[in-house]
Amino acid sequence: MSALKTILYFSIFKYPITKEEIYKFSKGTSTAHIEKELELLIAKKIIYKHGEFYTTTNDDKLISRRLKGNEMAQKMMPKAKKVARLIAKFPYVESVCVSGSLSKGYYDAANGDIDFFVITKKDRLWVSRTLLILYKKIFLLNSKKYFCVNYFISTNNLEISEKNRFTATEMVTLIPLYGKATYQEFMQHNPWPKQYFPNILPFDTSLIEDTNKAFLSKTIEAFFNTKIGPTFDTFFRYLTLKKWQKKFDHLQSDDFNIAMKSTKNVSKHHPQNFQRRVIDKLNDDYNKINLKYNLEIVH
Image (cartoon, rainbow, N blue to C red; front, side, top):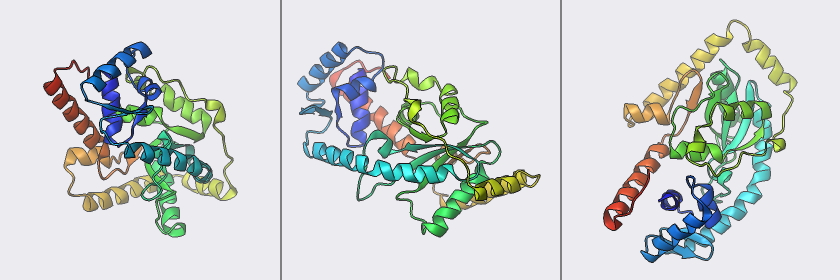
């Protein structure tokens, strides 16, 4: 049941969704089929409908929570664009996208932050990341509310290796703001999310802007483009990895390698390993519902 999968997924985030959104994030089914499935699920009280929204929880407070978060997201986007423009001017940054909850049109005023997905030039990911983190620590007093750069990849490793519903959702909801050509190349290397969401249309790349690097940024790049550049990049990666291994030693090795991935061309900082938790809960919910209602659930 494609609609059920979608509703269960977003219910993990306490996020009711509309029929149009269910179709958008469902797998190759018609709107008529979606409507029949929704009627069946409501009749069995597996899901509930509040106005135009569907969720697994019979609580209309979730609707007001979503609408308030949607309104806040609209207010936060100008700030996100301003910060993205700043990030794009940093050395070796090739493309900047808004990710996380804001990219899905939701922002929690009390606990939310603005997440960014950053693509850097090849072989200088850790130089670029270190400069951005130093800026955050020194000039923003380490505040991540408007400057959460927690996922980097480089242009010589554009394909996302973890292919699942969580990463597919994150990819198709990215809001690219700067670096049009690099973003387009990134999407060309990652056609696989279409297997999960064939109904989602490509992002309108005409809205993506480009920025010119400032003199300071060009000067820093010129310095690290010398023979010492690779040495610094390797050193910055080594320092970061050692720090994370010590700080997050409670994570199992497999979980650490995914949540805190620190290769030459990828840097992730997701200490809560939300990807694993979401996927595990989703599968658990599927199994429980299938066992209780004897529904045919397509994974």
